[in-house]
Structure formats: structure tokens, C-alpha cells
Length: 553
Image (cartoon, rainbow, N blue to C red; front, side):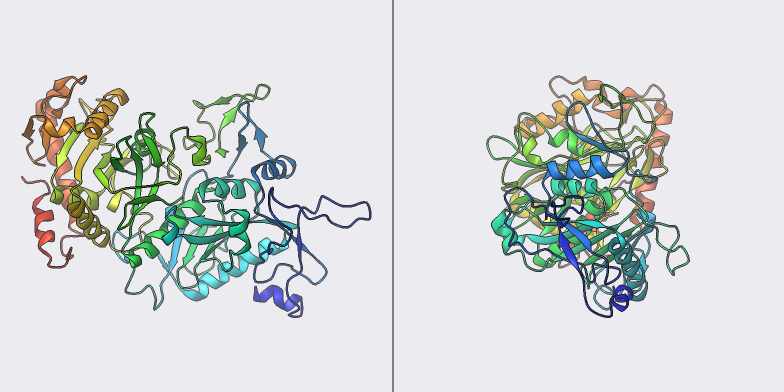
């Protein structure tokens, strides 16, 4: 940073590789190297890595999980080894993402490209304010005795791989990204070079609340021109992962590649299914199927050749003596998380790539209880519900949410997308049409009444529905059309009570059902007003078809 450069009289950084705690008999530091790496590997540095000419900052570069465990247990309070060998830790005051504190630099590069205004997750900041926060983050990291640096890749498709560098102050953050991103070989590290994107995670240090554009002591700032991200005031590890996902949502469409907030798996016959949905709707649960190969559970790209995957126990409570985790304990947060390398899944597909999807499944956690457990969608309906992104915010996924609340999130991931939703929708429509993929809407929420009256649809029933989609048998079922939304719903599915397939049958109060259905239809219409005037596709005809695919009453 410029501030620290002035302290060193522009002499530049002083970097020592390795753990400062490991010293030789003569008192000199012994650099620590990750397993299988060579001493000739370049040690990356920040713009200035010491806060005075007399102080060294130790860079712990691409440490192995074992080394990161040691660092966490030795130096990070609140870190423990659980009975199954996982590292349990705490993320501090923030136990979920803070979308209201996310900022994106609005400049000549992003002015016309990004989605700004009503409904957009992109809250603007200027270049100067970003540099103020960047300076603050870098100064904090440089004041520490050591920092962790990860050089890794995003995207399993080698032709569209992105090089990322993550600089952080906590071993658990380094371990989290070690698990989440693709780990380079020693040979790939030798030629890693300059990263395409860099994260400076100074989450233990707050931003200045009196800085322009700041609304709290937390700020997650994205500068697409500089290809940098700065984190202040939150130690929640998910901010790094979702920050990189936002970057992919910006970079990939430039290459005519569709970035997706979805799960993905593949059957033994090579049939691929995508699962769209927000956190808590069942992406991970339903895409992780022991009868199918897992490609990924959260973030993917759909290219001209097929799909590829883009991409710690946190805030859990455990017994003081046995170290057994109590997953039912929500005293820290409902949003407990585990991160593990995909290789730990016995039926994972490595490398995480697959052919074109056969089925596109939109998951919705319907808190109103009026959406059918499964509906077959035509292309226009698929686009309408993809752009709408209806679901319910589930407890703990974001700060302040204690019970399910109906919401709309464009493309089932508005918090992460960078371009206007219709641009992603047009790409999805083109790919589905070209590949002949079928769209489905699956409700993993309530049946027999709204939240508080009805019951959550049994997971066993949802799995049978998904199995019928995968096998192709659901395409052969008999269908009938519903009122208002005009869904095609099956009249029977083997192993599932027929009465729940049409929501009106499971409601005892038919009048209340009709009123609730009309209420939800009205919410859909009101939400879609934001997108009604945007041209979708080359000739704009798709816009008219999509508008006609919404609720009619």
C-alpha cells in the first residue's frame, strides 16, 4: 500500500517464507513448505508486505491441510479437532453472508455492462473509496506477523480456467479455500505467474463506518477493473467463495459461457441434470445422490461442450470431552457449514465435467404451500421461473432470517449475478433449445397449507420425483393443467400419494387455497414488472412468450 511504502522509504517489501515459530538453533527462521513443493517456488507478496523496514511479514504459501490444522489449533482461539477429525472453528459475529454490505466499483468498465438499479445486488461504490478500503485491508495484513496465501484455480474446464490468489489472516480461511477451489500441482504452481483475480481478506479488521458508501463496519468490495476483492469486518468464509462466484458471473458470459448457481450430477448412462435453487432449497441434498455421479453442488458453467464445476466445519457445537458434533444445536447459528474436497465423495466425478444437461430442475421452497410438488415446464415457463427465482429464505443462510420468508431472487442467485438477469436467461434458453433439455419446477417446501399450517413435503417423496425425472418415466406420465399458473402436473407417480400431486387436494380449506394461490400469483406478477420491458434474445419474441407464461387471472 502507498501508506506502508512511505514508511519503508520506498525500499519495498521484506518477505520471509515459512512459519515464524519454527527457528533453527542459531535463531534463524526455517521456511515451511507445503508437501511435495519445491523451494524454488515463487513466494507471492502484496504490494508492500512489511509495515516498517525493520519488520518482516511471513508468508505461509499453499500450506497442506495438516499444516493449516496445526496453525489453527496453535494460534486461533476457538479452533478444535472434532471426533471425526474435522477442524471446528467460529466465524465471529457474522455467521452468514452480509449482502447489504457488498459493494461493486462503478466505473467506465462496468457502467454499461453490469446490472444497476432496482432489484440489482450490485450496490455501487467509486474507485477512490475502494482504494481507501484496500489500503486499510493491506495495512492490516501487513501489520501481522504472518499471512496465508493460496494460489488456486476456478473451473474444472482447463480451457476456461481462472487463476486466483487468496491472501488471508486465518488458517481456517486458507483451509476453506483449499477445499473449495481447484488445487494446482507443484508443476502448475511453478508456472502460475500473475493471478487473474486476487482476494485480500482482512475480515478481522473493520472498515471505517464514516467512509463514503459504508453502512456498517463490514464491507465486501469488488473491483472488476483491478480484478481485486477486499473483505473487511466479516470472518464468514462464504464471502470469499461467493465473491469468486460473482467474478465468474462476469467473466464467463464474455466467453459465451453460462455461469450457474446450481447443483449438477450425472447418471451412469451419461445423462446430466442441473438443480437450480437458493440456499436451503435442496441443491446439495438432491444433487448428492448415491446412484449418480456428483459433478458439483453449487456453482457450474455450461459451455459449448457441456458442463463443468467452478469450484471446514464452521460454527458447530460439540461435546467438550468426546468432541462429538451436535448438529441439532443452533445456539451459535442455524447456518452451520462443512466444507470438504469433492474427492471425499465416493461417487464424485473427477474431473468435474460432463456432457450437456438433459434435465433442468428449478427448486423452490414454497412457503405458501400452493405450488405442486413437481411441474413439467415448457421453455417459456422455464425462463419465467428462472428469471423470477421464487423460493423462501431459509433460517440462518443470511443474517437476521429466523423463519422462512417468501422472496424472489433472479436466476435463483440474484445476490451473485453481475449482468442483467435476462442476459443469463437468453443464454439458458438458447442452450436448452439446442440440446433439447426439459424444464421442471420442483417444490421442496410446504403442502396442505402455508408455513405454520401445512407440512413440509417429505424428502422421500421429492427423491422419488427426482428419480422419475432422471429415468425419463415422468415424461411418459399423464398430465393435467392447473389454474392460474398453467402448470402441467402428473396425475400419478409410483410411490407417491396421488392426492398431494395437485396442491388443492391436500388443503382442507379450499377457499383459503384459492385466495393464497391468487396472492402468490399477484406476487409473481408484481416481481416480474421489473423485467417486462427488457428484450430477451435476438429478435425479442422470447420476451412476449415468457410474459405469457406467467400466472393468468
